[in-house]
Amino acid sequence: MTVRKPYLSRRTLLRGAGVGLGLPWLEAMVPASGFASSAIPKPPVRMAALYMPNGVNTSAWSPEAGGRDFKLSPTLEPLADLKDQVTVLSNLWNEAAKGGDGHYVKEAAILTCATIKKTPGADLGNAVSMDQVAAQGVRHLTPLPSLELGVTPVAIGVDAVVGYTRVYGSHIAWSSPTTPLAREINPHSVYQRLFGAASGRTANSAKMDTLLLDRVLGDAKRLRAEVGVADRVRLDEYMSVMRGLEERVARAGDPAASAWKARVPIDPKTTPTDRPKDHAEHVRLMLDMIAVAFQSDTTRISTFMFGNSVSNVSFRFLEGVGAGHHDVSHHQKDPDKLRQYQLINRWHVEQYAYLMHRLREMKEGEGTVLDNSMILFASALSDGNSHNMHKLPIVLGGRGGGRIDSGQHLVYGEDSPLANLYVSMLDAFGTPVERFADSTGPLAGLLKG
Image (cartoon, rainbow, N blue to C red; front, side, top):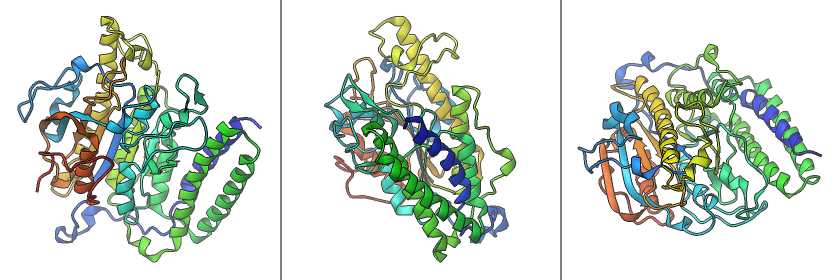
């Protein structure tokens, strides 16, 4: 039994399941323009978290001055024409991640603000991530409770240097302390899944989906008994995805689910390739999927990972860069590496700006989808060379349906809890909590009303 067999089976079945399950309870799509203006409900609020590994060149990150008259730094300059829609947040950190290894303890907890359990095997330990707290509150309103995306396959095995399973570095979305949510990395499969959700399926298709799911779960359980610990971790993750699909099939018979209608049509002719030509195209395609999902209201929650922890993706496609991401993040104060590091950081911000431009182009009532969204950009490290997790690089885009007082650089006291940001975002999203992790309250100055 090889590692490749469960991996290939998972990809094949997920691709099939993404269309086959198809959420058969859905009614036909009705464009918003088909309603009288008085009948159009208030647009929903969406939330996405974009994670960049390996930290930043701190000397080129922070804006000059605070408040509304701040000047964007060289790395944040791609946000210039979105300045009124972004809020730069300085001096936040995750205290629970201050111990342990250089990467996994910090990066696996970027959305949980928890201390992960040190383990080389299947006994994972983290906490429920902020995005999934939000998803629990609105999961009955959309076909897909949330959408987890990435561009890099899950890393398996143990990082022998620090003694942590690499699975931690492959996930930022956690539905329970022991359940990371698997990411889809194929843009074509994601689009099929979104289109299937929006177009509906027949009763016979739902029955076939149930049979497929039964077979998948049975095969996975059988394989689990035959493989080693590392492969069991991967299979456990695979089965957690299948259980989520099982729930969607079960919901097909729920009359309440038929109330959902897509806000705009999803055009099957615009389906993307399943073989992106390079890393840059792959990233853009996945960001396009978030935009489509938000515009159609197929989901209101998404996470995207530009790379796994310790990602060493080559950025030689950028002029002036000749090395991998992780390599240059360990710059040891070498001027040339710092220069390349900053260029890589800036490229990631450009992709973040790309998504926000897409959402801003999508008109929705008197505003745009971006007006009704919160798009978080974050890294779990500040300086990658020292693995520093003080003064985290954090930007929040969008107005959250009018609740976010955007267009500011908010500078907080040193080592203010990152969890306070999540309390504020959950409030703006409509799923308020009294406390999240080590929060002490909402972030001052971020919310209106």
